[in-house]
Image (cartoon, rainbow, N blue to C red; front, side):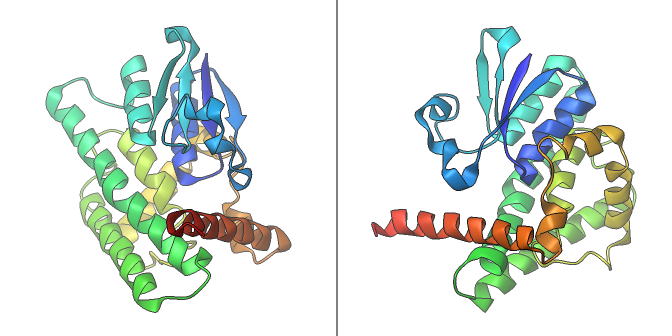
Length: 236
């Protein structure tokens, strides 16, 4: 049994999707990020960085793993699935996984902050991070022109990138001119395990987009978290 400490974010959904794909039993432990539960001492003992997701593998002497990419690799190696065993095949998957970890995630995350949450609109920052996100989307689109999935068969590389790219509108970046990326988004999104993973915990993406009271509440909470982070950095 695996304990999954998570929240309804792209990084959190990467792991719940993988667990569903691998049919591994897990217990969902949802943290309230707005209440700073990820900074509680009990969770910091699992992940010293105080971020979700993290897992504890109860079948392996309560072995803890943090960082979403590291968790995906651990689960793939634990089951022998979603990543090839041969050296070159494994490397291809890890290359595209690192593409998400080092590029897609950070750039879209910053686009979210400056486009949605930051208390003042800094257009140069918005343009910078939206532009870089779109550039990375074009890289994916170009690769997917000649490949059904990112690294051979469906893998943790697809899960990691898809969980972020699907939220492109929340970052203010459209993909209408990227047909191969759109095809891949639909292909991965149609998988039953992917759909189940998005419910653990339920995705708030649609609520965020619809302009409802729930969407406004989500934005307000995220904005407060950003402002709290700024206050800690400046000592305010």
